Image (tube, rainbow, N blue to C red):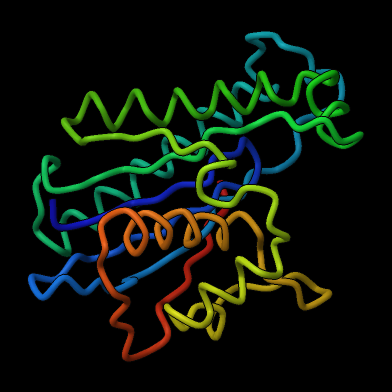
Length: 203
């Protein structure tokens, strides 16, 4: 295993981060990014197989992720077996927000994205781990996890921001998942000489 691709899945705003593992047990965040899709019309938000609903968004975002992976593979000349893919697995918390997401069907839709992503990478021969939110982040506020990745990976200098100046949390979480696994599980240290490139695509 020489590379780690970490993914924060979503049907509308998917985040991803690509790390290189060096022989010196150091790691380098090469690039991170996000994939955005337009909102589905309200008439198609139900759990259906309609061509214009959320299923189409899932297909679009997963296909775009596959295209990005192919570009990375062409540039860095790695085989599928050299890549560890980490996909965030959503948790349902007892908060009002968590219960609302569960009751609305949003968790079911998100799980569909998770397993769509996992399926394509396993089919390609990559090792794929599902990472529960409670394992890598727990209940830490996003501000703390973002400060951590800025400190170790110099992430954020080139990151895309909203009109309010906020860093995209899906992309930040993708970096955070990779950070946790690489530093806490594998025991590598961050080796970041410059701020990584941040890419954003729309489908």
